Image (cartoon, rainbow, N blue to C red; front, top):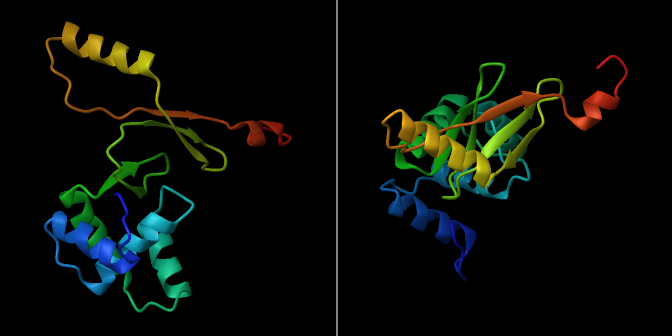
Length: 150
């Protein structure tokens, strides 16, 4: 989502309206949280806790409802990483895949054109026109490998 000289709240309101959503305070606050967080993959609980810490009066059910609305509107993508709970990230229009540490939960994004081309070729060979895909690679990150017993 591109920013101009608009204030943050004006920009979020515009983004919400462009997605067909009314610019309510909970939606604006949750969108601001997703845009400003250094962590790109947040659970509903992460967002809820951060809002509470910031003095915002938003219920957990509201956070879930808003995130589901954002997903339907294409503002966020939902991922079901190992462990079963959902995390959300802003949909910035650039495809990428994920590699995740099964020990600490670290998530890194990557894009590899060779992998992308191979997936398109596999789909084509099977008679499919690929419209989308998700690739999650699970492993143990370098930091966790250094910990004794990993």
